[in-house]
Image (tube, rainbow, N blue to C red; front, side, top):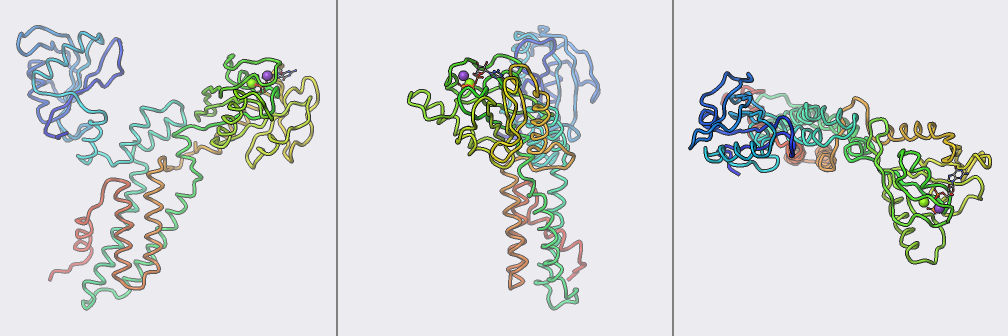
Length: 439
Ligand SMILES: Nc1nc2c(ncn2[C@@H]2O[C@H](COP(=O)(O)OP(=O)(O)OP(=O)(O)O)[C@@H](O)[C@H]2O)c(=O)[nH]1
Ligand SMILES: [K+]
Ligand SMILES: [Mg+2]
């Protein structure tokens, strides 16, 4: 995957559309564009051009052509966009012409990879762009845009800068111990490490909200047979997704629907009624129900008001679970079920369903960050930051200046892996910038 290649790809989705956007990037972009469009249009201005096949000069399409000279382009390289008529034959003919002129089809993610390699964005911003493209809901879109816009890059980059400075001071204290540098540099490094560690720890203590928002929440509906689980799923989904019947043990497979709750994408899973079953298919269904409940971010424990609460569903009422008393149209809801105040609902009449939706939206907002703070969004972020925190703790207690230095360097490497930046050269730069050690 040489950066010397000039690459192209469809920037718009597959399939027929009014307009298809083809994007090209790389050192030969200018030559190729000239070969195809008969000249270079003015930079960053949409210009209407005839695109011609290089060998036959046959007109392939009338297209809007945009020319983005590097380095002020998305990839940092010379690049271009062709807004073609969206038919498959047009796209194929222009792609063929681009290949004939020396370009090659891009690998997945290659444009953004080049943007990263050319210093246009750090790794977290590149991930943000991928998330933005995948975003299904408002809260996901906002989080992804923030990240693509560099919110995490600035936070982590700022930490890396501070850390590099601490390390530089610590190294200087070791290297130039006899020179007339301030003598408390070592203490300052430790104090700085402690302050940084506290900030990182606060950022890490987010209960996984950013990651949950990126991935979506899993909510499992649990309860005894005939509690009305499938009826509730259908009511919340607004369609007959699951089979409802008066026969206990109707649902076997897990039935899932996707909901958008306050901007958080939620997979709501209806499951087999929990009981001591004999039937092997039903037993497998119950095993699947329990597995889904284990994986779930939130359990919806459903009880019917016309039956005593069953022991297994009671056992699933854990802190944070939502407890429902269904069928309030035939009997009143008890004040407490398993120590929790149940939400009275009726899947049949619709009573209490809007309360249930509000409650679920509130739980979704609590579990999956939807505020303004820049949250970490990937296990990769958590792992690298936890590692940095551990090394900083090490630096604070290390007995020898060299060991403090080593721990700070390791912490910086963890942050460097996170953002894809920070090398040893940076440290030297800081040493020589901060101290005029002109010897
Ligand atoms: N009166 C009344 N009946 C309800 C209500 N909700 C569900 N039912 C009825 O209760 C029966 C069982 O409903 P389901 O939704 O199939 O219950 P389930 O919990 O999914 O049952 P299994 O899949 O067998 O575990 C059906 O006859 C429903 O019509 C309700 O709020 N009020
Ligand atoms: K049923
Ligand atoms: Mg069911």
